[in-house]
Image 1 (tube, helix red, strand yellow):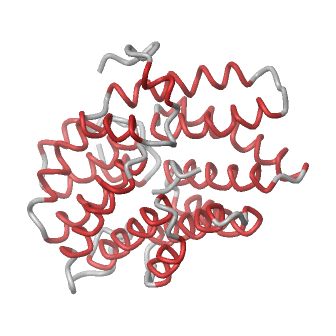
Image 2 (cartoon, rainbow, N blue to C red):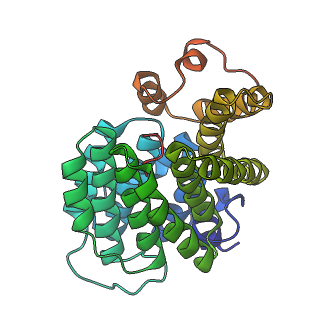
Length: 298
């Protein structure tokens, strides 16, 4: 299969294990796709090895691994990796790859990762400064640039200002046909809408999050399914809607799968994170596990 379609296209649920035996680009793309599916341990094995090599794919690998650490609440650990990504990003070289798999894309990934790390640490001035340094070129860096813009506004208590960037991210991802990025953009947009809190925005946000929950479940994108379900369950519970219990069960099962698929460091970061629901982490054996607002930051 075309492993790029799994990482950045319309087949994010595709089986990419065979690509782990490919060349350096195929291995990186496969690890990106596996991270989206919640296979963090498998992705970390590949990305850690690639990050040691330096150069373009060493930088991209460090950024991808940082993203996975952030998704489990490990913003400090991610910052170290993003710093390495920025330090090893090529100064020149090609900057015309359609998916930003090039020197400019690597630099954008690193800077946006550092901005997301700063958001998670509550350093919004730093996040804004890093965000302003990015010159997005391809669709992927433009989408991520808008995600971070929205997340800065959410973290600053201005959810109404987050809606615009999230809308742009969603439209850009749809134009590119990038399913995983569409679903992540809709998660950011849905979150901004429900946090904004007007009756109209909440209704729209709930509908969007319900749709996102269904699609992330169907596609097996556990890394997106559980935060979508967490936001939606909290909104439904606040409104005393009976479906909140079903949504809660769904996201807890997805998070259980993610935690069981995480490497030891990833799980430790989740245990220490204030963003991951702690009762699930303390319960020992996660329920129904697969045997194999700062959690948004990517």
